[in-house]
Image (tube, rainbow, N blue to C red):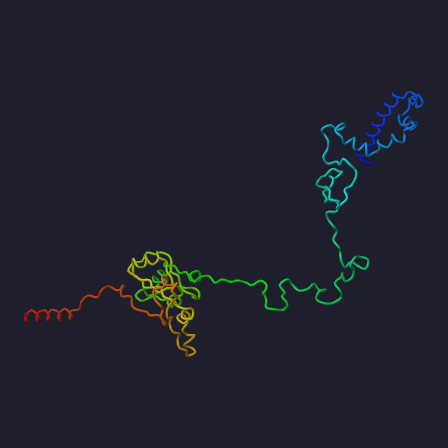
Length: 329
């Protein structure tokens, strides 16, 4: 017997003794017949004994024990006030549990969950052997995957949208300080126009140029440079032009740039080089300065050379012409 049940039995016996004492004082005849014995005997010998036992059963003692008359303000909220179980599906609020609730005995309300049907567990189980799928066929073997669309084109249900990034993101980024380093090493000639072909051949650009070269960064230049690239930062352009140089943003198509960097692909097969682009789209009006030629036009950097002094022959001819003009006058 648990502790709760023992308490209930003791409280029920106390109630019976108190009630039997009250009946004994009111009826002297019954008290004389019963004697100084237990109150249970007096109640049994009374004429209304059968009706008296009905309200003082275990359920009545349970409810009395949970009342505030016996427990005062220390009524535990985890005990139920009735022993009737709630029937699932009757539309009423379920009653609280009739036991102490702790972390070790948490469970759902009765009828809240259903046990999973374990299929294909032998002849004695529910849905045994083939589990209701049949013997053969695609449906008995798991079926197709979720992206299967009846043997049509792949990913037809969920098309993949791909967006190409702008060309500026795909440019090869080259720093001005690296060009200055290659010039100081003698790999690039500052007296001539430096093209993207020169940058690729000398190793200044370490990978294949697919869309173009973006020039960025600052460096202290003591000589002018003439560079042809695809794009250039405004600060880098100002740094080159302050030293007397020039930066030209040339426009090439992917085919034309490939012909500039790898002309051997055409010459080895005796094919003519592709023609340069006729122009660029109007949306690129402020991004390019000229259309790139195939092969690129390389000119001597006249700004890098000091001005040539006048020769003696030219000076003598000028003096003779001046003397003749004075004689005619």
